[in-house]
Length: 376
Image 1 (cartoon, one colour):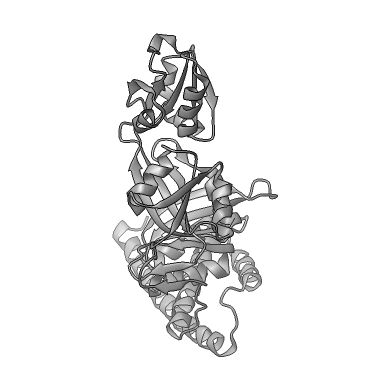
Image 2: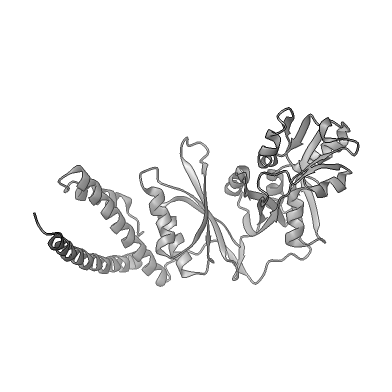
């Protein structure tokens, strides 16, 4: 049996050879990039790579080695592509996104739309972001808000996108894909839910509770302690408060903000009833104009991946290679394609950053339907 040190010395020699060969391969990849700069040929040639991977994999002497060889060369080819993207971008071979850089966002005389009614959390987020003195109005659905932006009836819309307790607002993710509207800002607000009833009502009178499905989820533990209550979903927490007021039945209660109680003349029967006392919701500010500022530091995108092993890993590697910090990732089913998914990613950066341009170039070539949702 060979000595362990002797075996490790042999591995060290082989590793140095691998490093030398890898660096030689990257130099050749630079030559390939130069050819593609002159000819306009795309970097990613899936047919060529699949054929080469099949040939190299077949050289393995065992199934384990075949798997390892394929994984090794998938990674080498991925790094080669990234180097080529980098060189092409450095030579100005970069198709800029259809975004316009502006010095600042124009809020002067802006008309802002939110979903719900007076007292909705979206309205609270609107006031936090734009200030108290705004020209705002409300619509019934989130789609109505997106339509208002699309049709030029409003300049900005405020939409909830994610809650720290209940997760994403999936419908608004889907709407961002469907519409060409653009995220230009975000606002996070603390969400403290209260149980609201008529002035003459007591907690013991309640049999029915109304609220938005997300609010009902966020107060799940509290509602679990009142299993006898029947829960009803509405489109908005403020709408629930309005319904309780209009129905005038003391056995009905709404889950909404305590500020809503003042608007509709309701009584706070119990407060801070959400599961998470640090409960917060992130709202996006949406515009019909595809603009960003030089101070923008967060980018949201979405894309579909190849429906094959390792595809998500290779897609996300573009962030790793370019030193980009990814903040968030979600997936949503692709309409009309069972069991296929669209990925939504938030990451740090500005569209002017070279690293961002490299990453987006790679994603554009190696994914399906890349869409930049906003830089804000």
